[in-house]
Image (cartoon, rainbow, N blue to C red):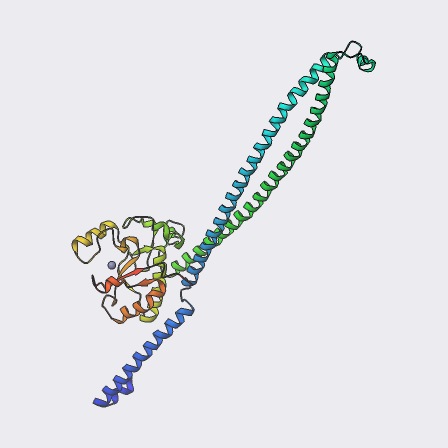
Length: 362
Ligand SMILES: [Zn+2]
C-alpha cells in the first residue's frame, strides 16, 4: 500500500479503488473457501460429535425397544405355559376322581374276604351271587386300574414335557434378555461417553458448564426433549445450556447448533455473533410485551420461551447487511433460520429461530 501513496491524484484514487475491489474479492473468496471447508470439516468438531450423539441415542432407543419387545414375548410365552399347566392340573384332578372309587373298591374287596374258603368256591364251581358280584367288581377294578395306570403315564409324560418346555423357555428368555440388557448397557455407556466428549468440546469453546453439576444436564442434547416438556417461558435453568455469549441460554440442541454456527461466523467475520436476547422466561416476555407493544410475541407464545430463538445484533439486525445475508445463507446448515413472518409482520431482521428438524444431520 505504501507504494500507492506516491502516485498522483486521480491515478492514486483509481489504484486505491482497484486495490479495494481486490481486497473485497479476496475476502469474499476467503469466506467462500471457509464455507466450503466447513462443509467438509467442522473446525470445532462439534457437528461430528452431535452426529455421533444422535446416532448413539437412536441405537440406544432401538436396543431398548428390542429388549422391551423380548420381555413382552417372554411374558406371553409364560402366560401360554401357565394355560397349559392349568389344563394338565385339570386332567390330574380328573384322574384323581377316577382313582378314588378304584381304591375304595380295592379296600372293600381286600377288607371283606371273598369267602371263608378263600378262592376255593371259584375252583369248585360253587359260586354264589355275592362271589359273582365280587368277581365282576374285581374285573372292573382291574380294568379301571389298568386305565388309570395308562392315563397316569400319559399325564406324567405330558407333565415332564411341559416342565422341560418351561425350563427351556425360561433359560432361553433369560439368556436373550441378559444379552439385550448387556447391549443396552453398552450403548448407554457409549452414548454417555459421546455426550461427555460433546460437553468437553463445548467447555473448550468457552461454554461455562459445571462438568459435574446440573448445567451439564442442560447441555446434553439427548435431554433436549425433556426441556421441550416444560411450558413456554417456564423451562428451569438447569434444563438450559449457556451460549458462549455471556448471560444467554438456549435449549441444549439449539445452543450446540448455535455454537457451530458461531464458529463458522467467526471464521468469516473475525468476531462472534452478537446476541441481545435468547431464552426469555414468562416474566421477561410479559415485561417486553407491555413495554414495547407490537415488538414481541404474546407472552407464552414466543419461541424465546422455548429456548429456540435469538435476537441478534452486530449487523445482523440490519436487513440485507453482509451479516444478515451470511446468516440467511449459512444458518440453515445448522438448523438456524429467519422465519417467514419476521421478513414482514412484524419486520424483525434480528430474530432468528432454531428448528431441530432442519438440523437433522445426515
Ligand atoms: Zn426475537
